[in-house]
Length: 332
Image (cartoon, rainbow, N blue to C red; front, side, top):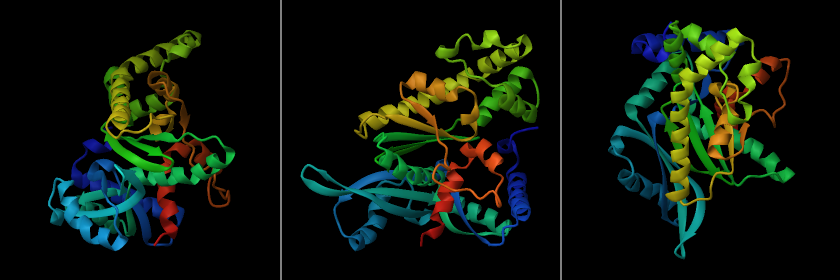
């Protein structure tokens, strides 16, 4: 009756291990190799600019240069980098480089969890970049139809946290995780109705409606018992919603003013809580930016022989990160 986050670490570990084993068994997966991701709050992510140099020079320089950006010594972390683009600043050619570091302990924990579940990771990514990967699959189609927003924010509202990624022409320039997600909404509902966690989760899924200015009359047309329930839920989750909104707004401001980039022109929303009724309209109204639900399977043909198509369509917003990871299968 409590959320997974509140469990003892050992209990949590075995719960995850057993769940992974169960899924593998149920779905009849044969392979042992998996592509996986760690959440953004477990990684140190930095966007840096360095003078233009060859691949070889960069490879030699990065371990020394990275130390000034990472608040840990290099022997405490596993790190990797990727060149995002070439830019010119004050008539000087530069490379924009993405730097990602993860503490050794965090990485070892993640690997031992998977090993205990009987699988071995061949690629370990970060949630946020898997999200970008899934998005880039759909970007191609948009540029062909001519409908294209240069600057897009990918916002994924998960259970524990919300990840924000801002991309310009498909290249990420800001990645941020906010410590607020669907669990916060559930806990507020649990408190308001004095029920257990599982019941609160169910109530959220069935009855949560966010009141938006364009739909103020909506509740008056509901049957009264549902009406009361829906308004109580809305009241309960409002503080958490406003915190989410303000953190997103702060990230957008930072992007425009500090990263010195064009304002966000479109938001693509995914994650479990993007299914809460009107959350897209709420964010769009308050941020003044169009919001669309980020459907990841637009460019993918799904075989109904292997997958339950109705289930995938109903739960598509949960699959953006997983799809982004699956797309890495062909990479070296």
